[in-house]
Amino acid sequence: MTEQRPRTRIQEKNRATILEAALDVFSKHGFRGATLDQIAQTAGLSKPNVLYYFPSKEAIHRELLGGLMDIWLAPLKALNDAGDPVAELLDYVERKLEMSRDMPRESRLFAGEVLQGAPRFGEFVAGPLKALVDEKAALIQGWVDAGRIAPVDPYHLIFSIWASTQHYADFDTQVRAILTPTGDEHLEDACAFLCRMYAGLLRPNGSD
Image 1 (cartoon, rainbow, N blue to C red):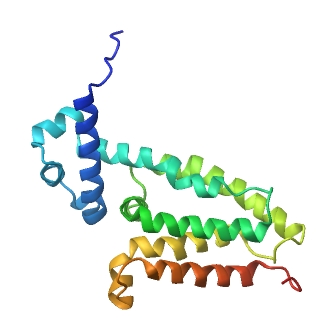
Image 2 (tube, rainbow, N blue to C red):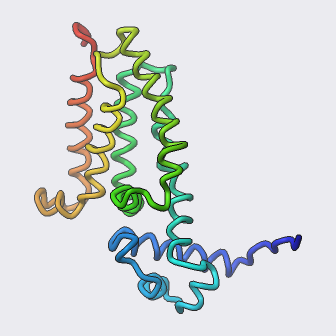
Image 3 (cartoon, rainbow, N blue to C red):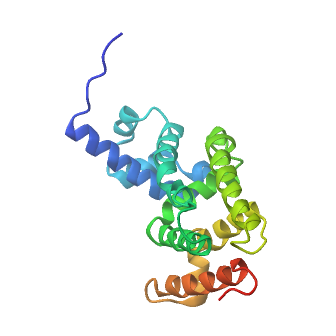
């Protein structure tokens, strides 16, 4: 078996340039609407040069999704039983909003894949993602059973947090058209609102 040579600095740079360009193109046009020509133009490279590094548009898309998953799931993985349950969940809300602010293209990339039925990433959704959500749902249910948070359905709580935080990335154009912020100050307002809302939902009866 031939040993694969390590990539040169130029090769690593070109791969990174292609992936950055593809992230921009896929987040704007979706997988079906994106083309290799668009990716090459955005990267400032020729189409044959792009195909030297990646054999197809699908290969680029898979590389992007694969590199995104560990980062994307890190906030959910961080939920643990060491701290106060309400504080843990509000921290999760805040981290998800921070990702909507800092990684809007990545959010739209993932949303676009799921909206198409996850044809290129279904195994991940049905496998590692489901396993992680099951694990954290069990943790949340344990907090409910112990009376540490108010009774909630843990799965729908997680789905609700995803929907209410990722909205600010996936529907950024709509949000900005309505609120007309000068920067990202609307995300600070969103954080205050969502944390207040979830705190009210999660605190056990009679707690401050």
